[in-house]
Every structure is written in C-alpha cells, then in structure tokens.
Image (cartoon, rainbow, N blue to C red):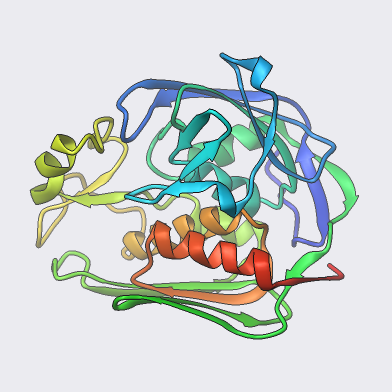
Length: 285
C-alpha cells in the first residue's frame, strides 16, 4: 500500500501482521518485533517470548527512563527506544495496533522511522470507522526544563515544530515545523535519522549506551562535518527531533494542538505527553 490516509479523521489498523528484526541501539542485542492488527483503540504491547504476560495498553505514566531514548515499564519488563516505531504508527494515522516484542528494545533498523513506514506499507491498512475523540486543549501548556521548553496551544489541527541549537558547526541552529498529515510525515519526517557526536561515543558506550550504534544506523557529527554523509535533508537533525517528539506524543495520542519544542529531549517530550493526558478534554474528531 502506498496511498496513506489524507488526514487523521478516521481510525485505522494494519491489514495484516508484519515483522522486523534488528539490533537495539543501546543494548546492542538482537530484537524482534511483530505488528498485528487490533480492533481495540490504542497501542498494546505483548511479548513474543512471554505471551503469558498478556497485553499492556501504552500510556505516558509508563515512562521510566528518558536518557537518549524513551523507556517504558510494562509490568515486570521494560521496553526501550519505542519512539521511532510509535512515531511511524501515529504519523501514518494508525490508531489501533498490537506490538509484540522479543527482547528489551525496539529494533533500531536504519535509525529513522522509514523502515517502519515500509513495513506498514507491506502490511497495508484497514479502516476502523471514525477516529476516537481527539485530545483538545482548553488552555495552553508550557513546560520548561533548564533552557529547554515545550508548549502545546489549542488549535483546530495538529501543527508540530521543533528547534535545536548545537555548538557544532555541522548542526548549529535549526528550526522546522509543519501541519502534520500522514503524507507529510512520510515525505518530511520519517526518513530523518538519529544522530550523535564522535567525541561522545566512547563515554556513552562506557555508560552502557549506544552499544548497537553504527554508521549505518545513526548520523555521526564530527564538529564541522559528518562521518557518514550524505544527509537525507540539509536539516535532518531537527527533523529527527520532530520524529522523536511525535513518537513520545503517541503515548497519549495525537492532540488537536500546536506543539513546539525548543532543545527538546525525551524527558521533556514525555512530560508534555503526561500533561496532555491529564489536562486535555476529548473533542469530536
């Protein structure tokens, strides 16, 4: 399937199961993940290697760690690096799906959401009728963490933006925003890859992080340039920040709001998702 929904007015699930395997960004271990259709609204996680644990519906309250990825506590187990997959599901307009995992981390694949878009295209989409009520704001939300902040303002549509600021000349200051639709997500956000910095690699690996990171699944900045060009967009880093923001917001569902993050992080994004869940009131989709 290559024709995506035109907007987010309808509910969708997958038409068939689809599976991917790959390395985990931080664990460096192999992971397997299967997406399956669901009739129940929302995203539910189960375990291919422990089906007896049942399914758990995702919610921002499950966030238990946010250092360089979003980690969820799901009963007795944890699932790390969920943001790229959740961004693909939400960005494409999927409102119901089962996520069945073997391992403790979602496969990184190429470091973007593009492989998940391709997997979902392989499975196809099936309509479920009208979309459940969207999250509507009655008042603005502003969250600040140090020099970083995130806002959500009442709006008739989902407009999402991000700005980043790094001392490295290859990145510098970047800003990107758009009115989100499934097609815009596929063309402008999904291919943007995760990125890191050459001078931080050894320190992060010593801390037990990015053990699965490599030049084929992450952009690596070396100050004035990149170790593995070319970039997919001139401003690929800020587009990836938008991808992360969307994936973290998917824990609560796409709001009807203008959302913007300056120097965002998974901690800030998921705090915004939690606030949206607690303060938003349903409005007709």
